[in-house]
Image 1 (cartoon, one colour):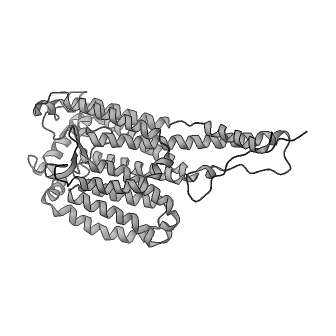
Image 2 (cartoon, helix red, strand yellow):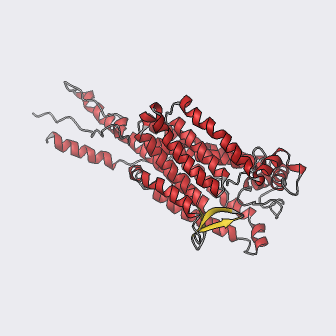
Image 3 (spheres, rainbow, N blue to C red):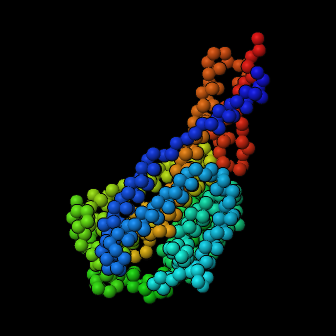
Length: 434
């Protein structure tokens, strides 16, 4: 048997090795999704009755969108990351097109003066939710292609910041200041984790801060949000109405809560009880324990995402690692802002609680992001299993009759997605002839 046949046999065996999805990440996502279904059912009954659409209208919609999102997540879990990376530039074009479509007459839809939705006939789709996923994938691919240049040159560092500014300008026209700030934070976080030179990045960030401050106070309603946040009970029936009722719900829940379904604030007192302020209903019905459960599930999901991303970067699977970092930043920041708003720690921003709040486009795109995270964990585990097989088979002949010249075992870095290194195919030593 010649050496070429051995190499072919080994390659087939390695490619046949599969991985497994991170069980902690999957469990946290399923727990948040299940809690979201229960709490949307509890918090939306009065809203549906008030609007005349039936008590279970929002629950049925939420379950349908969650089912559609689960299908998209399963598709993402089964798609190779190298296939996703191949469409990075197309996804960037999709970000700009999606944010422009909301301004097309007849296609874009306006709600409460905000031009953020695309009318699909059967439902409305918020374009920025898809932009978050597509932008993270593009930025992860960019950091892989220009990893060294981003740390060394102004041009490579400013390009993603320039792209972010274009997207932020389109979001400002909608207007959607919450998503604008979130996109900027994701960009800064991914650049830092991607190895950008921090003193060099500080200059454009500091230059943008006054502009963001002007945008924040330019509109009267944003200024009212800031003033009502400082003292919501100074005007509890006007500018401080939302936050005042949210704080009353949180205070009424105490430690154990008043019981599932027993909330009073959700009975048309607390606005957006099933979307933006669903955590206040959780605090009222499940108490401090319920809020800690929500925070713990997010901490588990985001913590595992950061850990998987770190392991990917350490093994030179940079694209997978940066995707995990970006999604972890997105979910942690959005959850942090939503929780802070409900607890009166931050001004009202209009951001939903990922996987928990009711909302079609938000639920589906968050499910896609979770599917990508699980795919990252699967490919990392698969690579680790393949390397373990290589090391075990290389050690077995050495234990019996060590060869005159030992051949190096391919490292984990050789099988990564980095474009800077060529793939090294594993091979066995030729069998000794009698």
